[in-house]
Each structure stands twice: as C-alpha cells, then as structure tokens.
Length: 167
Image 1: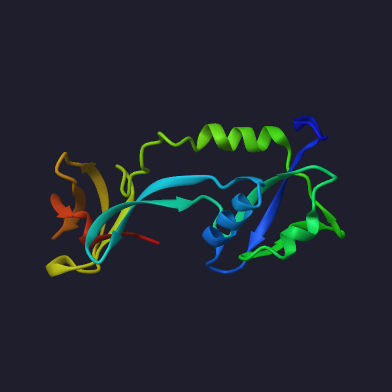
Image 2: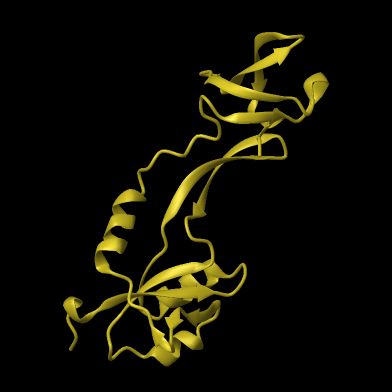
C-alpha cells in the first residue's frame, strides 16, 4: 500500500479541446488531479461575461506513485501524453502545486478586464481605431478613458464591449 509521501505530481498533456473529457475520465478512474482555474471577464458578442478558464489550457496535474498503472493514462480518453524529458516522466515539485492551489483558490474574484493605466483601442462608433488610456472603471461597469482629441485630453466613458486592449 502506498502512502501520500510516496506519490508525486506529474503533468499530463490533453488532446486539443478535450481537457474536460480527460479530467472526467481520470477522476472516474480514481486518479487525483489538479487543474488550476481562474474566473475571468471576457467580452463575447458585446456582452460582458465572467467565466471559468484553465490557467494552463490543455494540461492537467496528476498525482501518481511508482506503482500506479501508468498504461491506463495512455488509454484514457482526452489524454495525449505524460510530459517527459529524455524519456522519463518529469516530477512536478509538491511546493509548486501547493502554491498554485493557494493562488487559484475557488473563492477568487474574477480578474478585471480593464484596469487604470491600460492602453486600449476603441472598436466602434465615431472614435473607432483611436487609442486611449483607461482612467477608471465605474460602478455600472463603464470604462472611462483618456484620449487626445484635437490636441486636448478628454475623458469619455464607453461600455466595455466597445474597447479592446491595445497591442
């Protein structure tokens, strides 16, 4: 019988767009996995949406011991390969995984789409393609930007869906 101290973390690469499938099948087989996630704001079809996204898309940490059935991993749906170097699976340090678990806890607030000081480009309307700098985000989620119009700095508020981060 192996103990937790005998177990190490490794990294699995998933097949394209099959990370969720791989995670489900690994859990069903009794493997301990970890996939850090973050809640992030995105603009999709002019709508502000908060959604959960993988921090490392396409990769899942898995805890295994030397006696684990490693062959089962290769036959698991959604799994592409175990990340290896020189033909040997690479051990991920426990303290790295613990640090990620602390940093990406479930009660985390979503990362802001725009922050003061960000360079943005206006994507719609009469100011389309003009660059600006985010000055503030209002309580009703409008973005106040500072832009130069006719050699004068002006502050104008825009819905988040009309802005994109500049290059």
